[in-house]
Image (cartoon, rainbow, N blue to C red; front, side, top):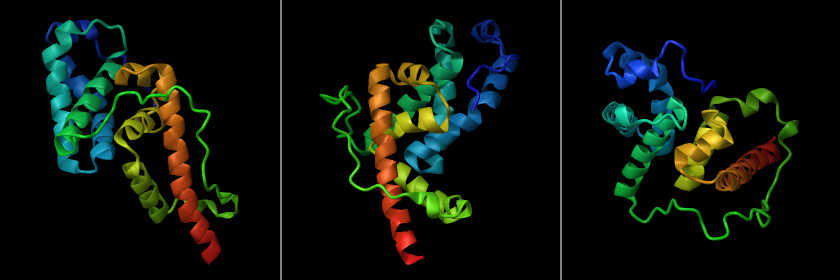
Length: 198
């Protein structure tokens, strides 16, 4: 997904309060922001809340946007914070700060890896396969899920993901590695059982 700001959107016009320009911003980013909310929270109503609150916050704080990151990264940061606030309301024990020792990813080793190359491609891309992948993503801890969604699903760079989540690039890389390995392990279990059944 291309993360550059659509050329027709003018930051100056947005800051000046141009309603038509803000409507173009909403049109350009509603789908990815809603998708992020839905994948983070698994609930369409919650995703709708994230979408609305993201643009309300953006509208309220546009005058203070300094442009140190791209407008899209700034919107993702607001959306991520909105999603995390909803998660914290439901589960106050959720910890999103960097773990002690998180910078060291050397000890991350999967316990089960299955070679899926024997499976036909349509099996991997089937409705059931996508459902299993979505469930696997939902099972990730919130801190890993958010990094995975921004980087691998929405296509932000490591740098943009770090800026959106206020993390170091090393933290992003470590969390991304953990997320990918957890997903691979979960999917290996599923596809391993499917291959045994074949």
